[in-house]
Image (cartoon, rainbow, N blue to C red; front, side, top):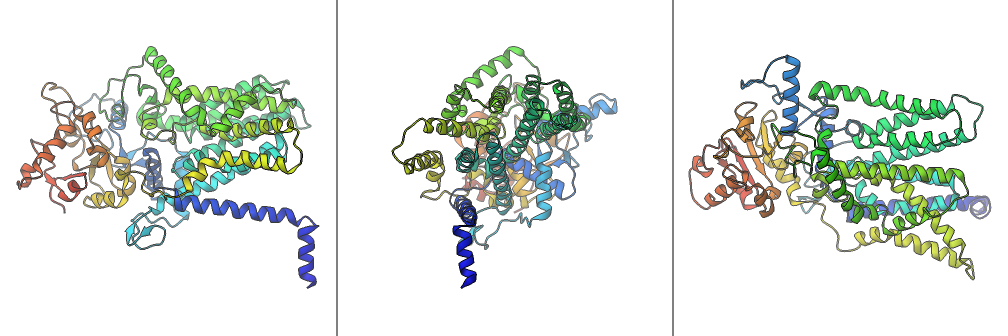
Amino acid sequence: MPFLQDIIHKVEVAGGVRYVRYALAALTALLVIVAYNVRVAKNFGTQEAMDAAQLARNLAEGDGYSTKFVRPFSMHLVSRRTLEKAGRQESHEPADYARIREPHPDISNAPVYPLVLAGLMKVLPFHYEVMRSQPFFSSSGRPWRHQPDFLISWFNQFLFLAVVAVTFFWARRLFDATVAATAAVALFGSEILWRFSSSGLSTMLLLLICMGLVWCLTSLDQELDEPGPGAATPLALGGIAGALIGLGALTRYGFGMMIVPALLFIWLAAGARKIPAALAMAAAFAIVLVPWVIRNYDVSGTPFGTAGFALLHGAGFSGHELERSLNPDVQFGIRALVHKLLANSRLLLGSEFFVLAGGWATALFLASLLIGFRNRRIRRMRLFLLLSLGTLFVTQALGRTELSADSPLINSENYLAVLIPMVMVYAVALFYILLDQIQLPFRQLRFAAVGIFVLLLWLPLIQVMLPPRGHPLALPAYYPPAIQTAAGYFKERELMMSDVPWAVAWYGNRQCLWLTLNAVRPPDDPTNEETFFAVNDLQKTINGLYLSQQGMDVRLQSELLRGDGSWGQLILNVLLRRGRDLPAEQAVPGAFPLKAVNRAYLADRQLLLADWARW
């Protein structure tokens, strides 16, 4: 009994209530995580997530920084650079200038996130084959969830919790514990961030890096404003901030633009030590980033590989046309870039910007810009937030590609999302300022007002977790069993072609080339080399063609149906012959070499062709 009385005394008097609150908070967080993963979370649904995952697996398996998702444009850049280094002119001999007969070097992804995932794959028990009997991952003997997708999602949810924790401590440092706790709870209930955490994208890692940068700049500003005994402190903090920006740029290239608001933030600070701090920041940023730029230039002749041409998407090339081109006419036009900036700015202002942290929080943040906070540091960090918003807004508008249309809001091109924690903190701070102006008759009403405010911010998350439960398959085109079965017909070193090569590379673990612009050479354009045969005859034999539901639907057929040499023509000709009992050599028209048709895939609105009947 004395033991029990001691426990009760500690809970009621000796500060034990605090630990009970911590336990309840941890239990609530665990329940939300479980509920979200059971009711809402899905397999990967974006090109970028699968691309990063397959790249990480190649790293984990010792294949180096190579990719099985091969872009024709990547082949063009690598081939051109190989010829330059060899000091020879282009030739039609079947030499492997594009390095496609070996593991193809990746020149499309920043390296940090794949490296982190590769380490995760070394530690956790990843099972890449679909599971048909394990609970949670299967249902009634059928594959339900893809285990590697969810392991990566759970890791990102762990990073999400770390972001919430850092946000809490930063908000407490600037404001007080009440604002910090409310902001952390509101951030944890952000439906947009939950979607990012389960998407497989690098956003959570980038958020954590960004909050580390914010913490570092807050300390640097304090040190410049109130110099301490250590003269080297601003220099060290500037160097750490620059290294964090460099690390963020190696996570997602566009984040490197954060060096601009960070340097402006230091330049506008007081004190004589701001110049050495700014120089240290710039130097650390360059030291972290430049070695990777040199690697990319050595492989592709460009500092950022195919990612550096994102400016041309929508400013000379439509859709995924550039990345599917074997020999594009790449030209930069300032006028086209200005038009792209203006068009995408209108698009961002009309949609994504105002759902940045949820409608309520974004509105409160904008209103907080009218408040003159007494604390100088709060005003300074708000200035940094505004500078960052402007920089990332322009970066996102200019860097927008078809990836943003394929997966609106939840994509790797959404840079504004990394500022959600800061936006949330300032929104909550304004809420408490307004609440303090209201004379409430009794204290309990204040708690009720805070509860209603948090509930409104949580409402989108609560709604998605209510019945009916969502299906874990993001899109029919990304059904792991179908892709694994199709890829399993081909050997590991053989080459496939597909409209979803990222899914074939991740789920099927096979080297897969994105569809070229044309299937065959158009009769009215005898010099066109943007064809299947330009790779099959001169680079590497293509043994199979897999088209998902995404490539077979009416919308994409209308996009592909541009003439006699298009993929749409080939698809339609195969479909017209499927009802006839034709020999294999007649099931696919013309001189197209992949004659064997898998009729089981046709029945499911997919197309699988091979060089011979492997099934």
